[in-house]
Length: 310
Image 1 (tube, rainbow, N blue to C red):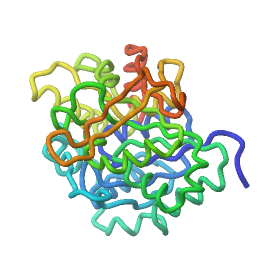
Image 2 (tube, rainbow, N blue to C red):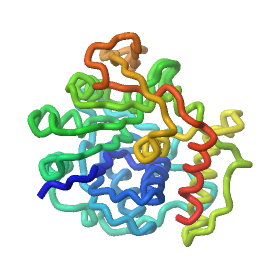
Image 3 (spheres, rainbow, N blue to C red):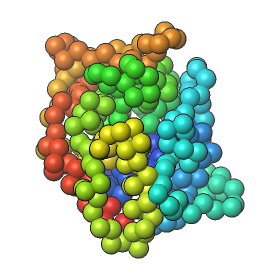
Image 4 (cartoon, one colour):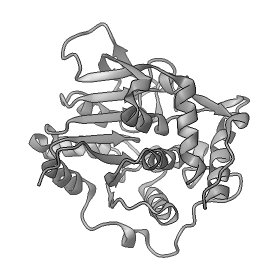
């Protein structure tokens, strides 16, 4: 039976800031119906190990489903050279990984079938996408009628300015630009939190709160490892990415969005994955929206508060 209230699904490549986003949803009292995994930050095996260890450590109750292990057409490209082999850095402790095969902790059935079933059962549905869009593009291609019933996708990706994985491309867009193109053209309502907005919300060492939860040392070490990405590059602060996407769903009043068109560069080469947004085009207004401003201080404080008692 369909639910009347908005239901949430998360599609993720499960690095540290993906975990942080899940903790923010938990902090906000949001029930997540399911989590689908996609290769991105690291290969799918490590993504699944991260999700399984996070469930066990933080007591998450959502079911997990394995999704795409590679992009639709191109060779896989990860961010392990930045994030490390686990897809998350640390100043000490890492998630406690099990020696048992990760697949045993995954729910039966693949991600596409699980998302399809969830959409059919929930008329009011919202997908938070934190990685490459391979799973959602596959759903659109295989089950277009069901996919057309998605009420909203909120995605972390793209950039109105410079990139972070190439000079012009953001990682989630570059990792599977063909998938992004399919989702962007699908007429499914799409809200985008891009790199430029994320760069306005950042934290430095002095902002890190005292952790009080049962996993306080682990959370402190992982957050410190995340900050170290910036410190090792000579920057004082680190931008907040995936948690900002979750925050835009649970506290949308902190954000301003505007309608936009989006084009993505699909030709292989230096420009591959580049996203071009045009906020002057009003055709299909409201189908694609991009975040253009956020209450940065409030956003940062809320994101960090979500970790204190984790």
